[in-house]
Length: 295
Image 1 (cartoon, rainbow, N blue to C red):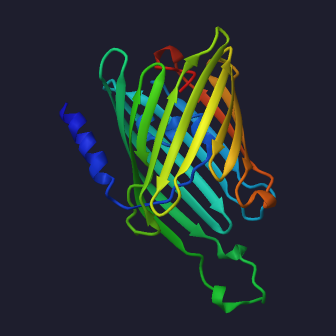
Image 2 (image 1 turned 45 degrees about the horizontal axis):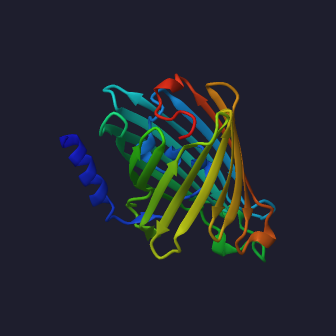
Image 3 (image 1 turned 90 degrees about the horizontal axis):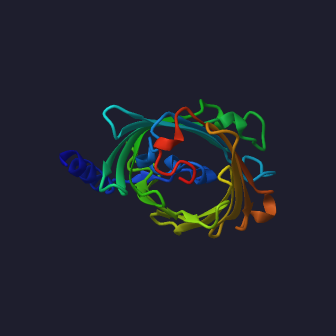
């Protein structure tokens, strides 16, 4: 229990630090580790995911994001490690994040488990000034090296689950040594698995994202799993997008997914939507996971 109290104290004390706005893509619909480090190792064996997102098609300089996620349970039992790598390009800005997650699960009883996670990491921001277009050639104002910003950041989260329900709270960017664009951010997730018939399982879920001095963002999602292998879903992200997504189990280890965001915000007239693909490979036996297909 001493470990439990220590992790709780660290998470809630850390929440007073200032953070930086983090990138949100639709990949959390396929892997909750993307938004909560306490989810690391939920499938026990090595689980690896690759995501690529092309945002706001037909819009010059629009964001492109590459995510690589991996986690595994290690000895002693209930302790997990995970890694996240993200490269985000927006116009002339390229941001790379590399993080190491440490999660610890505590069984409350035979059906209920709570997990705690922390995830320190390193961020590198690079501004490629060579991509700027100026009205006059040889502008001496831009005749200097492209700047690079290096900083430390960290995430923390709590994740509760049974075989049918899950919920969690996390802060993706607790603090930044350089104190650049500092905000406080929290993500709250939840979902419930409903057995509709022998062939169909439904999973309503949500993500609430709050950033200091910014409107609260809410995702409302509904996923239908047909014969377990095929998952089809729709989501509404307030003031931003309607998302359609699907994922398919090719076999017990390999899964592919795709999501499309149709913009409903102010930029809808200037882009053709956002596309995201997912590849997932699982190296173990899904029988060890609490709810291996649904979350």
